[in-house]
Length: 91
Image (tube, rainbow, N blue to C red; front, side):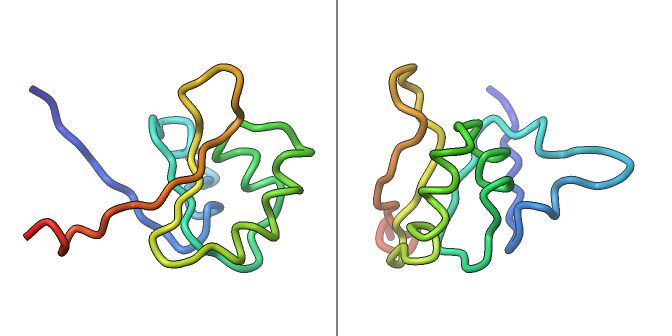
């Protein structure tokens, strides 16, 4: 048994505060559609290469509702893209 805490923000830079970098504690990070996100922010959230982050900038801005980009659990992949199931569809 454990505790789950969700942080949600409209900007990945919200987690990087002067006093403490909350981003270091994030076990799972999910990026939904977001315009104007920097390649550096994508790289920090996903832990991917700078080249991959630059390639993803445009893709992140064009994601459809419920499409998500996240860190991959596979060592051979820098990220995964999937469609999240909305909570309301389960009930």
